Structure formats: C-alpha cells, structure tokens
Image (cartoon, rainbow, N blue to C red; front, side):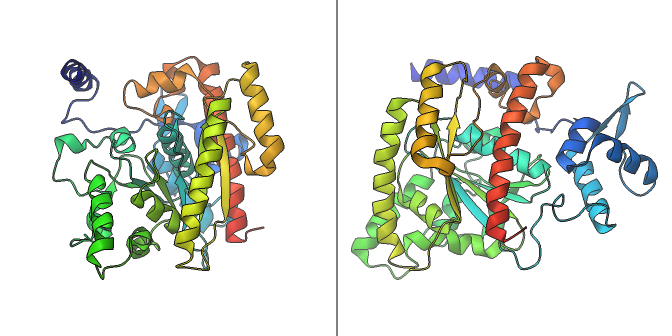
Length: 381
C-alpha cells in the first residue's frame, strides 16, 4: 500500500511540479497591492501617477489592469516610507529599539490545519511588509514542501537539525534558504530532526558540556536576530525536545484547534503537559515570559451549529485568549494544496471570487489580531 501511494504521489508531483521546476509567486492586482500597503485605492492611484518615474508602477495587462510583483509592492512601500508618505503604522518593519519577535504555532493534536495556518499567516504578514524567517521543525516537512523544497530529492540539504545539533552545529546562515516569496526565508526540515531527540536523551547520561537542549534554538536564532522582524516556527504534533527548545526561544504562541469537543478536551490535556514541562525549563531562566498565547479556531464553518457552540464556549471560558477571527474551512484551501500551493498563491481569477474573498478575509482578520499583539509587545501606540 505504501509503495502504491508513494508511486502515485510521485507521478502526481512530477506532473504538477517537476523536480527541476522553480515555484514563482503570482502577481497582485492594484486593489490587492493597495490593501497590502494599507493605502486606499484613490491615494494609491495618485501615488502611482505622481511618482511614476521614482517607484515601480507595475505591469499593464489588457491595457487597463495593473499588476504588481511582491518585490514591487515592497519597493513601493520603502519609497513611500522614505519620502514621508506613509508612517510606521503602514511600514510594519521593526523600528529602532524593537527586538525580533518569535512565535511558535503548536498543538499536540494533528489535523488542525497547523501548517496551512502557519504558511498563510507568514505569507500575509510578508505581503504587509514584515521580514520573516520560517522555521520548519516537523519531520514530515510539509511547510518545507509548500515553499518548493523537497528534502527527499536533496538529502544533503542543511535543515533545522543542523542548527541545534550537538555535534558540530552549522552557523544558521548556512542553513537559511531564500524562497520565491518576497520577504520570507526558510529553515527547512527533514527526518534528521528526529536525531536531536536521541542526542538530547543521551546528553543527560553522558553529561555533555554543550549548551542545554532548551537554549539551542534561541542561541541559533540570535545569530540573525537583526535581519528579521518575525520568526515563525511550525512544529510537529508532539511535545519533543526540539519543540520545547522552540517554545523557550519564543516570545509568543499560537495554538490552532478545531471547534469540536474532542479537540477541546485534547487541548486541556496538552496545556497541562506543556505548562508542567515549561515550568521545569523556566527554572533555568526566571525571566522567561510570553508576550501572548492565543488560540486560533481552524476549519471553521459558521453554519455548523456544534462548531458555533464550541467556539462560543471557548470564548466564554478563555475570553480574549481566543483570536477574534477564525480560519475558515473552504474548498479553496484544499484545491490550492492539491497543487502544493497555499491559497494566497492562487489568484482570485482561478476560482470562485466569493469563495476566494472569504478565505483571504479570514487570513487577513487573523493577521490583524496578531499584529495587535505584536504592536503591544513592541510598545507601539
């Protein structure tokens, strides 16, 4: 059965994304570009006309529609900020005196759209101007694959394991890979990350003098903390040593879960385990805190009455700890993933517009809430 599935998936992957293919990000309409820039349509058109010789103006399609690459959107943002046309509210990058923020997206429960949520949030925030480093800690490497990297086709590719390994860890810059998505770099994953669990277990009995396991991720990230605004870590559905190291390096946490009774029961058990283990780790650093810990309801269907009741239950019990926006369940997400694409990479022209707009609004609302948490953590008004 494994052979049959493997051969069929390989044939499918060869058809939709050959090994020598390079993923390319689509272009964005003027309306989308204006939304990412947080500038209203009339003002954006005025800037395009006024500064046509000083900043990118996109490409005309069919004579009257203007489309922009993600790189052009960022160049426009840089120009407008440098020339005082937008302020820090629209120019999201870290300001002097603000430190890089690291948040982990984590749940012990599988099948809660954790990786899909991680990639969608990272891509939306990148389009809004943040410089983002994604870190994949899942041996299944789903996020790595979504960014067009295939560990099985490149067994010598440096991965997250190499930056936290006990035996001759690599400098993090040798592991970071640029992606086709402007504003996002990635530290890929592979099955090698499992080795870290064996190394850590043996380090206890062997009395190794290397840095303890819980501090290894933060030590690695400190090498590039000035180069990014956000680090977003995707984790496997298990409480491993690598995950604890990621949590210790984090300043925030987002916990995705489905609005079902079984998932909420699982969440309570998971939170108890996580808090007990983190309490042990935090004895090593009394100043360890999180700027925020938020729950994100995923696979949400507002027409599903049991889900509606469970989401209301969570908000009644936990209040503002639950993000006000849900990650909706949609055929648009599934259709995009069938071709190894997050939904933001699929244009609204390729599917039903209402369906597409509903998903994009969901991701946008989630990022709005996360940005509020980031703003408070940075002390912004």
